[in-house]
Image 1: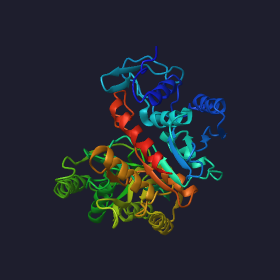
Image 2: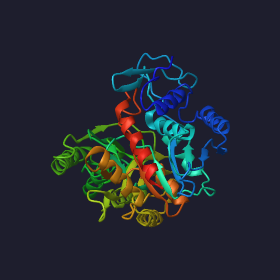
Image 3: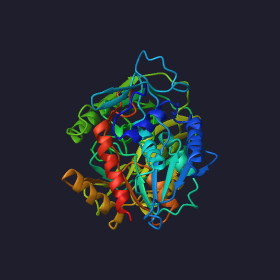
Image 4: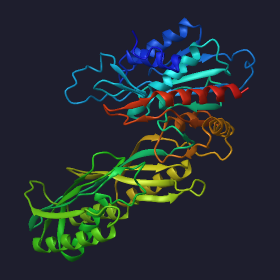
Length: 479
């Protein structure tokens, strides 16, 4: 007997449980993709499957809706696979063990994959139905959203008629997402030359910072460990002679780094200690509210690497000191929204270069390009090489969104209050889809799902029902 049998909304939860029987972690979605193709063919739907595994399933409008504007329903197939300690499940080969506890659905010992299995399930429930009125539907189901939105990047939408997009990848009930940032990863490699330099070798470490995701926490006033390190090194080399040897810090371009360190050879190690103590006091005063536990430490160390020469040391410090960082522009349209930002996320030293990795974000495509140009000019002045990867466009906020206005109207009738309209400084697939279909009117929403991407992921049945009702009524009114 199915675990979710008899629960409402029956069709949605039936298909969600069917999906949970098929392993579909990121990079392991081919079986689910093929299942969706077979689902469509069995029902006589128009089916497209590309080489990546993306699937598009199209269904004509029901009687009376044949000539209504087509609507794209969209979500992604892949889930993040995480297990609790002691769980022995092979998530690459085994389905999930669903559990119902009152109003909650979860998976025993693993993530649930409600992000974004619920979108796939709602799409299948509509495509399988015979009695739900709806306009022509184009259900777009992408792969590998969780690992760089690869499916949305590569999908071909040129044959679709939809210019209305209902994305079902949000996990906070009561919030309607109406825009997101575009982003890119930028790597700047500054070449360095090395030569012997007499003195003592020390390591300076900045630690104790709070950090956070650069799409969500960039405006919280927290410090960037690499930026602080640059200030320390500059202050030191203003008063003492020395050369950089290596620098390191961070792990992801989109995470505000919580620690960074530099090895340098100095003429006066005692002066280094005094300057580090001074800078720690300065930082603790500057960040007393947002990041109060900053620690600056210095210790003697050994290195088998020759120090950089004076010119290389100067150019690396110029990169750390002059590259923009943090919030650069706030929106004039959406109150409280960070519009454009930059995060120095990774610092690494190679034999002949220092590589700094940045995450560039903007909710306006033109400002994203402007920021890339700034970095390119700085890189040129420092004699470095710059590469851009993982670039995707912004989903720019539209003041005039008929679809959003309709959903707000339906939501207000259903809930008794208006939803919260959100614009994200992070990225979602809507940005890529809107870039491929000029004029696309897009909205993202979904049921309440807590603790996603962890083994304690929970989806609320009553929230699924309310969200489903909202979807159905919105489609009914798109006559």
